[in-house]
Image (cartoon, rainbow, N blue to C red; front, top):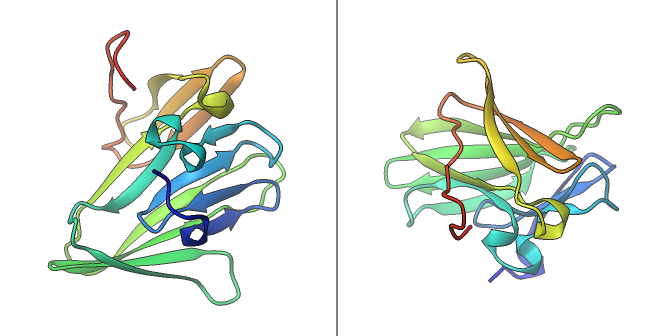
Length: 169
């Protein structure tokens, strides 16, 4: 069940926008423009319709969020028993491509994070073919479904979860 609409924060690059829940999940994003089909559609269904979660593994972690002053950078501060960390999220403006940046900044102690990325193209009607690309120093995942493609760049632990044909997504 998606969060109430008032619990979402907005990221935008003036061409499209992402909605981020209080749980650290991007539940809506159309690429590359507002009028394009969604890649994350959990807002209208459930996580199987596409979402990208980024949150602490500690289920008791508390959060506060706000935009950095005079910016459109969303800062979510997570506090757990072992530490404090921030997730800084934004969509830089560009004429050439659309980027979503999600950066974790440790402030004190240790906070372990988990992420789950479920890309579903064309309003969740197309499950992409995902493959590892890039290098060991700059890993990336490339997701392709028909004419649509997305490249996700991140840490070295970025790996696709392999599913067997016919498995539940």
